[in-house]
Amino acid sequence: MLSYTLRRRLMIAVVILAVLVSVLDLLNVLPDAAAKTTPLLLAAVILFMLGDSRQLRRLRSLLRSNKPQPTKPTGKAPKPNKKRQPNPQPEYRSIAWHGLTLRSHSEVKVAKALDNKGVLFLADPKIRLNTENHRQTREVDFLIQHNGRWGILEVDGPHHQHSTEADQWRDARFSQHGLLVVRFPADLCYRQPEVVVESFLKQLDESPPTRNQTTS
Image (tube, rainbow, N blue to C red; front, side):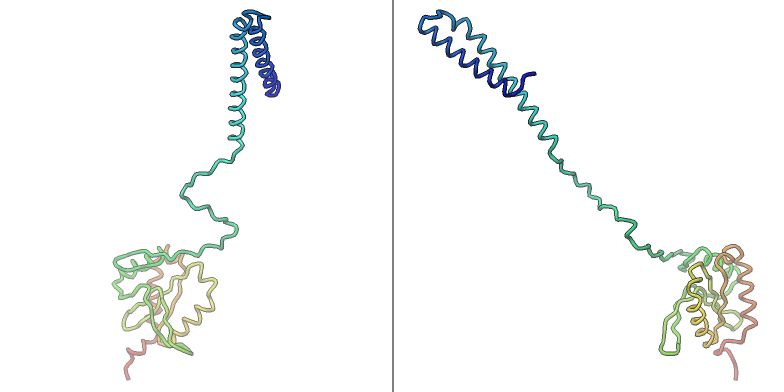
């Protein structure tokens, strides 16, 4: 295939030849030569022009292919880099049961066992109490009343392994107010909730009466 420069030169040569033939025809040097050669020369010029137009289209296609295409907006935010993200905090579980809000399926099992016993209890109540320095609000799993005594039943999940000292300090504050605190593993509460409730009620019955229940 001829190069673009060579085709341009050939087209110029054809045009010059056509002009020369026309001049010689006018001077009667080559009579009727222009009429015979002009169609051929015009056809050659048209072919050269078509070749140029194809070359231009190829050049345009090449430029378009090299041009960076704009990305369409997807409406989705880019995914965060998981390696740089902090560990997500565990969500606060909320399980509704007969108008109560419990925090685990183990607590639901214990609540059902207490209900079957006909025991008065509060689930996940917030208690306001005295401490060494000031008043504080603390939340417990179950606040239970049985035979004139009040006690707290705690369902200890895996997260309590990292807060043993804080739990002991809190339990001591409740004990100062005359409340028995008994803790049971969450796995045992889930598998044998009746055994957990029986054990708690037995310890509650054997504990000293709550202060506001004692008589002078």
